[in-house]
Image 1: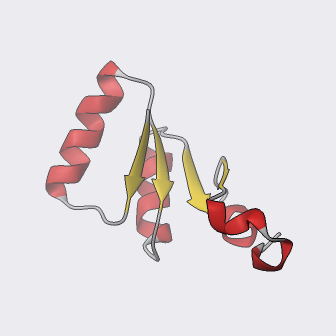
Image 2: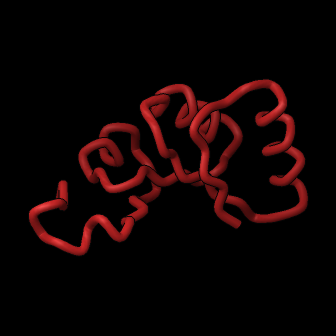
Image 3: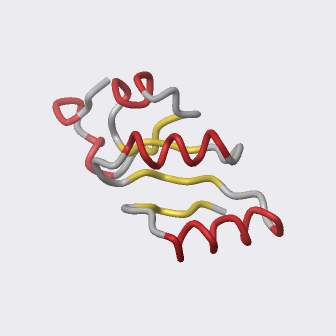
Length: 79
């Protein structure tokens, strides 16, 4: 399962940890809280992906990037 994450709070953290026990999950990071969410994912051994930005994915050592439909034109790509 893929979870699209924009922020982390106590309730979300608790739910992610519960889900991780039952299912294989990955996080897809959607906003600028990359450092906080990527540290949480690494600490809890949860794969994470960054949306549409290969440079940020490399910087935060993400497992990959999630390409949206906005990347259909080569002029919109950050690759």
